Every structure is written in structure tokens, then in C-alpha cells.
Image (cartoon, rainbow, N blue to C red; front, side):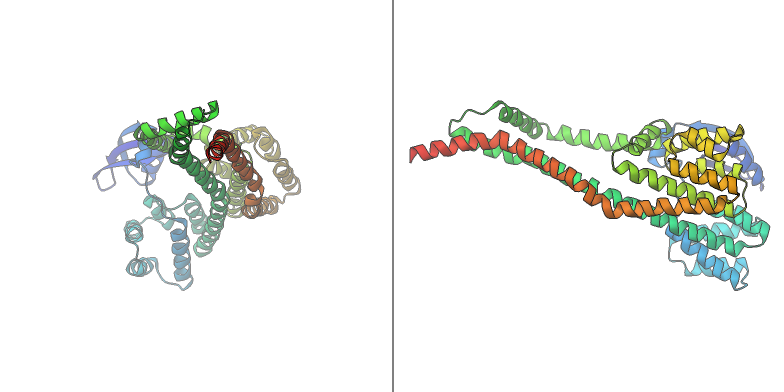
Length: 403
């Protein structure tokens, strides 16, 4: 949910903030952690998120990976944090990164630990902050930073593979749609005008197509407005929890491409699960973090069902079966991991399997979709033949008869 709140910080200065939280209590917990007092708290309409009013711009994963690796190298070399951030601020070419480093330095100078300083910036992924907290308790901050960088690199690879798999059908369908609109709006009217000059009677399908063409030519401004409005409504719907759930559910069950979405979400889930499990975080806490972190709102809702079942005493395997989105292979492998006490290995197997499946989709999806696109092109050709070739044939007959 999106909120606005104001209050007093520990120096007594008043602050005003916009933020996105899971529950209202999260605001008070965060304020207590930072030694602040919240005076006013207001929940805002979610539609405001669409214009970016309450969204804190996160760093790109590539920037975070580079930052974590540089910081880890400095720490391995025995350099103190104040010197590290001073050097990194001077060498950073990005203005946004310089501001982040400045905030980190200010937090550390106020006595905050490194994980809290990262958390206050609101620009780092939660996995980085969680692993830093574990690293501070165990004295392995440098290794925690390396683990976070490795996880984010894998997430970058996963997202890149997913986008590559989906961009082909989206691009191809867009080109086909553009071509269809161009033919209907510009080419067909010219051909029909030639046919009419020869006093040839137009069949009903040609007349219907011509009505559609005239409509597109006359009301093209309204069509552009509707198209633009559709894009605006879509982006607003993506920012609202209620509509986002149904959009994500639609993509989840889409034929063919839905498999890509499912596999990428599962790869994210099990890889993140493994990273947190390896760090020694209790499973109950991991499941809560996973529910908040998965990109798909539909998947989040199904995860909440499994999390509730686990709180009631179910095993992971039974809870996953109740969620009704985890595949049989996933529930079975997790069940074996629970029975043998080797859950860490099973999580790694599932994470690797789903990542490889996404990569396989990248390679095979164009070949799978080729018959579909060929069929659509065939339908377009039949439409063209039935509307234009018949009348054109009559034109040629008339021309031949006059010679």
C-alpha cells in the first residue's frame, strides 16, 4: 500500500515522506528502528503509484552488483568504511550513485551499522540488506556482499532470458498488426476504387472491409486517442494491486508464453529461497520475505495460501500442493529434501532446473511459434483473396473483353 507520513527525527527536525509498505505497522517499526516519531500517517490511493509519486527509484541490479563487488574488495583489503565510501564517491561517474554513497556515509557517521545504512537509502534490493544483516552477526560482511552480487547476477541473467523469450512473439505480432492496419486503411481503398471504375459489383465481404477502411480513415484521431488511453489504463492497472493480480494471472495462464512466465517466477522463488536458507535465516521468515518479493501479484496470492498452511503445521510439500501453482516436480523434490534433511541441495536443483528451462524457451520458442504465425499469415491471405481477388478477376475479364 502507498502511504504518506510525517514526524520528527532524532534531531527534532520534521520530515515528510511518501513510501510503499506492506502494512501500516511497517511505518512505525521503521520509525522506531531509526529513533523517529510518526505524527501523521495517511494511506494514499494506489493510482498515485502510476505517476511515480510514492515510488523510490531503485538502483539497477547491475549497479548494485558492481557496488557490492567493489565494497567487498575494499573490505578484503582491510580498508575502513569511511575511506571506502570517500574513494567510491570520487570515482563514481553516476550522480545517483554518488547521492547513495553520500547517504551511506552520513548514516555511518551517525552510528548506524552497514545494513541499516543500506536500508535507509531505500534503493537496494531486500536480499542485499538481509544478507548484510547476517554478515554483520557472523563477521562475514565481505562474503555476504559477494553472495548478494552472485544472486543478483543470476537474477539479471534470468530476467534477460525471460525478456528475450517474450520479445519475439510480441515484436512479430506487432508487425503483423501494423501490416494489417496499413492494408485495410491505405492499400485496399485504392484497389477498390480501381475496381469500381470498371463497374464491377463488390461482394459483401469486400463491402464490409471497405466500411472498416473508411471508418479508420475518418476517425483516425479518435482511434489514436483510444490507443493512447489504452496504454495509460494498462500502466495504471499495473500499479493497482487489484487489477495487477488479474493481469499477472492472465500472463500466467497464457498459452505457450505462460510457461516462460511460470518458469521465470519459479526460478526467482527457489533461487532466492536457497540464498536466504544458506544464510541461516529461519524458513518461516524466508517464506514471508518471498511472498513480499516475487514480482507476480498472482503468485504472491498463491504463496500466501501455502504460507498459511505452513503456519498451521503443514509440511512444505503439502503447503505447495495447496497453493495449486507449484508443479508436481517442485513439490516432490521439496518433499524429498524435507524427509532427508537436505533441503538446501533440493532448492539449488529446482533453481537451476527452472533457470535452464527459461534458457531453453529462449532457444526454442521462435520455432514453436512459427506455425502459429504462418497460420495467421495464411488467414490474412485468405481474407485478401476472398475480398479482392474475385473482383479483380472480373476486372481482368472485362478488360480482356474490350480488347
